[in-house]
Image (cartoon, rainbow, N blue to C red; front, side, top):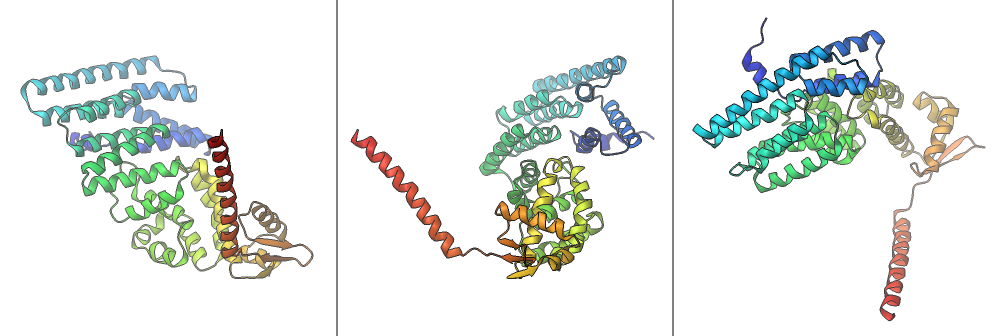
Amino acid sequence: MAEDPDEVEEKTFPDMDLAQKVFLLECGLDAPEVLEATKTEILSVVKQDAMAPYYEFLCARFSWNVDDALLAEMTAANTTELAELKETVSGHEQHDGETEVLDALFAIAKFFARIGDKPQAFAAYDTIIEKAKVSTGKKIDAGMHKLRVALFYLDTSAAKKFIDAVKKLAEDGGDWDRRNRIKVYESIFRLTERDFSTSAELLLGGLASFTCTEVCSYEKFVQYAVITNLLKLNRPDLKKKVVDGAEVLSVVQSLGPLPAMYEGLYHCDYQSFFRSLVPLYDLLLRDRYLSGHARFLIREFRILVYGQYLEAYKSVKLDTMAAAFGVSNSFLDSELSRFIATNRLSAKIDKVGGLVETNRPDAKNAQYHSMIKKGDVLLNQIQKLARVIDV
């Protein structure tokens, strides 16, 4: 059955689902037959959208043999389509107004985004942004399109520049909807930068008004919000915004191991929390934004839950704590020793007594030592300045 032309026009480019499939093929976690099926799906999308530049990119990345006939066919189709789009722009410039010209320029930019030509897509959207008499709203739209192209390729250096640019434009006159969309885009970008604190706040704030399905699905967005906010929220806020959060509960069936984690953390069911870390690690490894941070996140979750458990005790037997987490004494001893040595947990292990003793820092004493240290630094700087002045 042929596709409805209107539905094709509404499709957003670049296709983030395609980028995820390419990532899964690249990381190679699936069985060979699954990877082969994924490759077939990728090539099907490439052929359907005549993505000649992206096909060359994929062949280079995966060392595929180039199908010269297919590449020539797609390149010819791209050349013909681009010529028609440019002719449309020229026609509107001669006979119509600025609105029609702007729509035609957006069509060219979206064409380059569709076929996977990153440099040309950036340049085409820049043409719109730099054009005279373009509204701030349209410039923001073009900037967010550029940002989506950067995220498609995980070009984080370009994405950072585009985020800063669209935020500045929004300050000059962005409407409520565009400001919300910018926050969603920024929250995804912050994930790639491991800025989970900023991302957590943006993700949680964007749950109620999320509309950016061109970046990720709502279910995936909620996953990101839960993962980051587990590390950030205190217990009352965790209960209110995650455990009992309406947005989270609405998609709870699609959150994998996360419900067991936030329920386990809130209700102090540490075995359940720990068991959930294994499937969570697999989930993280298969996510193109979080894969590079998987080990870091699992470590931070372990530190979080160890810290919460120890907070209730002045001292606790090592075997009692190991039983609470469902792990062996030797594993827990090794874990706690490493985190204590790096000052991530305020405790010490009594090997003879088989105890873990908490060592909560004195806040006033810490402030005193911090003031002394900063004072010494300031005195040294003043002495250096005095010597320069004397000279």
